[in-house]
Length: 86
Image (cartoon, rainbow, N blue to C red; front, side, top):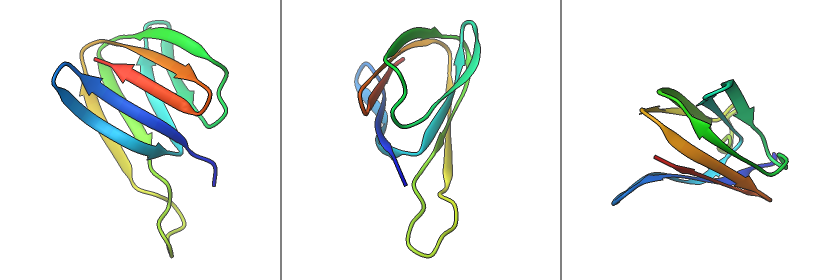
């Protein structure tokens, strides 16, 4: 399964740093989902929830999901790396 490297961080704290299958985020223009090989993008985020789908482990059909509540932020997607600064 294709993945990308996702980092979600704020000053002094890394909330997530690892492989992800998808990430759904609250963009200021509406909710959107980042998948592997996404076109490069830089956008702002509004208050809401980031939902990250993790890769499936051996024997699992689907990976687990993690959620993160945010107040605002900026996302940069480039190549196979996505960075969210809160």
